[in-house]
Length: 186
Ligand SMILES: Cc1cc2nc3c(=O)[nH]c(=O)nc-3n(C[C@H](O)[C@H](O)[C@H](O)COP(=O)(O)O)c2cc1C
Image (cartoon, rainbow, N blue to C red; front, side, top):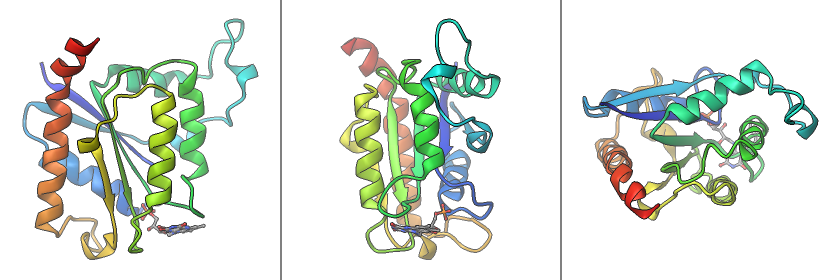
């Protein structure tokens, strides 16, 4: 059976470099990996614990997000940094996923990409922190900070940097070999 990786971009921009990176991952992923990209972040309601109790079942878009995460063997986030943090839409989605427990032991890669030299390192650290408290399985080899991203992707959203392509392929391969390791561990 194919190993399923779900990509989640923190950017809603149609010309997003982070979404382009996930599309590049889908393109370079080996044939035994089924790579899909979730695109419903902007359809999620604002998180409220009152909408998410045993008495009131979660909104349909939230159930769909949870189903996507449950069905994935691993998840790759790629996010921009906004004002030194992660985008609000991404944090909103994560808040819906805290109580569902869908990230427990889920192999999860965290990428941040920015046109700046910092590569969005503060958003990266923040996203790692949030996913860690959600007990995602995040290892050093699943973390990637990409500075000056616009020199690595062209205007059409195609990856033009061979070193980055190799790094992404390594990350995908590491995630795909994580399954047995995490099953052994738990
Ligand atoms: C409101 C706003 C705040 C931003 N703040 C940061 C920031 O703190 N750090 C950073 O590296 N880039 C920042 N940027 C620039 C983004 O990194 C840049 O727009 C990036 O291309 C967004 O990612 P995307 O191409 O995937 O949409 C900001 C952009 C906007 C619109």
